Length: 236
Length: 236
DNA sequence: CGATTGCCGACTGTCGACAGTTTTACCGCA
DNA sequence: TGCGGTAAAACTGTCGACAGTCGGCAATCG
Image (cartoon, rainbow over all chains, first blue to last red; front, side, top):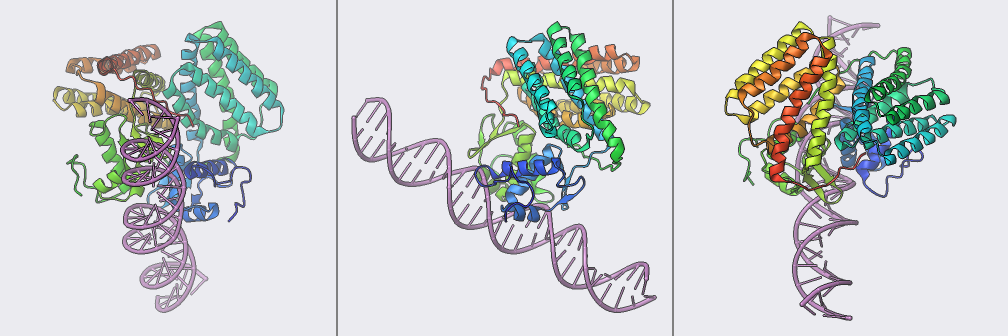
């Protein structure tokens, strides 16, 4: 009846059930309570969460559109398993989006944006010195989300948000090593400096360097696990 | 009982109901049987289509993730209405994705890719001379999809496919004027030439020009309708 | 005559159930 | 003991129904 696993997130009592189930599933996947490739039973989930199957199904559809689950007709939902190639693709798309964003941003770099980004870097640096790896990742993502936000293209931001779910999965699941706090700080300050300079080329270089570092950390991780499963996602 | 409006699309009898309903809704939106901003009643739809509400809801969720519908809690689903800014954003993101794709593609331009793209341009040119506007649009999109496909990043392709649904909406709904057949041909041949040249800069320029032309056609259209509705999509 | 409040209808969110299909387990046979 | 076939169990896809909620309309009050 009560939830055996996840503690803080699992009220499932007060508002939109679909979103709550989606949040629960997301957390469970990120925290590897469900392993990649594992099949999720609708009835099992609905029993465990104390809800009916309808919200579970809709939440699963949502997670599918976010790339965390894969649905196979008449078979059910499976936890997305990323292989090395897909991992590279995710970071390549991230590079694509952020490059474009920073180009747009440097054209319209308002004091407000500058202030918000600098503040977020401060928060990130603070988080980097603590032990909470999850928070560090979240603050890092939030910085980049702000970058996309102030670029002024809502649709671009949405694409990034879509990607973020997979990105979070990649980073949380695979990153074993943590970047040193000062590495993180330096890397982000370089971005801010590039924006201050107003030079698109400098921004380009800075974001390439920045994401290159992050990618290296994660891809290094995947080498250890050696996940060679190659399911493929059918295009629409 | 029977369908009052849409005639040809409404078999809804043989396979995955969710996908069939999604297809039906997509077509209905594209063909403006449902107007932008209009609210869709689940019960009405399920009655009209002769299915229960569950598949309708799941299909609507799918369309929501594709940006064709917007869900407001306790209010239902509404047909997405794009204003001028959002239209610009869509084309800006398209530019972002295709620029990146063509850069990747020029690095790995295989004979197979070359052949497939050239063949698709032929098909497109043929379609451009006919009267079927829908087919012309589809063949055009298919060309660009191939471009993304041969770029070799599945995730990038998925992002493009996601965007395609909105793109199709923009183009079909708003474009009143049709590009001349030879304009289309020239525009696409320039892309192929740039790829042949192997120069990233040439590709960059070609894709910018190409998408710029398409954008101009569509944005010109939105000026006439003057849709200034500004609903905003909440980020996740 | 305008604003507020209560009521009514419609609709969404959620649920339990049934049918068809897939997977699994068991049993007989070689 | 290994293998194939059959039957049962479990699960997904779909359905109809109920309850809570929201919007609109009308009646009432200032």
